[in-house]
Image (cartoon, rainbow, N blue to C red; front, side, top):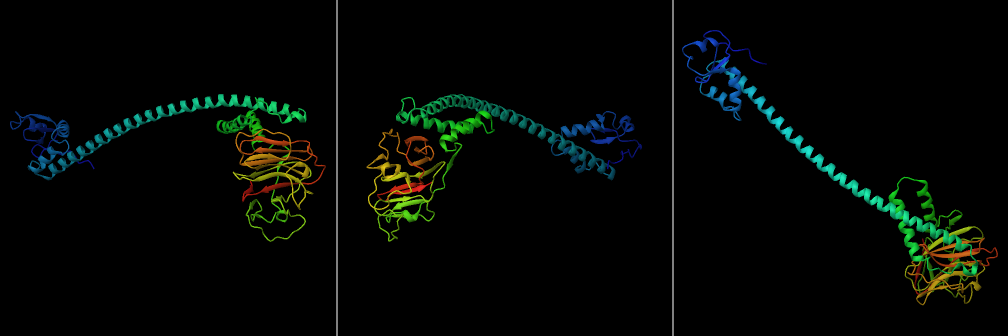
Length: 385
């Protein structure tokens, strides 16, 4: 609570003035007396402000002097001095807080300007990169459309010219283009647009085999057909040539001379594909075989025996068909086998690049059931993916 105004004990008047010589509050009657006539007298509020700025700054020395020197020699003087001390303390704390908040506000404004400037630079960089990607994507889509049109035209050509490779249709360049175009489409537009959806659909046709009507076959290995030197995994997804002949039943379905194994699934209609990881193995073969393919005795890797396939032997790729095929720029490590039963066509692609490796067209399937075919030697290993 604010203390009541103090009064002069001698004249019973309010203490409104302050005598600097005596360093004590006085009333207006005291000011006119001989005792204070020659003294410097100021209003009490002005004296209080002078003590705040001068003697009283920091340690409130002016008020302390009044207390320690005995000037305040009664209870009223003590109460009034404490009142001045409290007022001075509150004012000083307020000034310090205002100054600190002003400094903090200035600091935050500077930080805000700096961060906004950095964000503006980042936005410019992102916009520039986006424009660059859009320009490159536009060029790549244009090239891809041209290649697709050329492939569609090529598929309409006579069989004798179908597998000829033209200088402008470089498989490796096309594969790289497909991969970079797919990454650009995904990077640039997280929201579906008609153009993006069309581009993604075309890209998936070639990279993932997602063309309408083509289904990924669920292929497993048939242990009853596996040569005794071959060991199958528990999930029947991989086969290894172990070099040790196993004691297995010699049933009619089992290959007894060639290290072959067939898939357990048979196909008579539709279009299907599956992929085989061949890695860097030295001796292998993949493709399709007639269900009636010879199981006993020597079996040759050609279409006459009822096998349509692609393999590796003596360090180079081999084909069942006598038709010449282009040699790929890089040795494939994963093969995609695609089968068109009604169309009599078996094609082989590098599954990592979508490059066409070989194709057998107008194959005489004659409606017979076809099964996935696998050959492995030299302690090699093949796995379905």
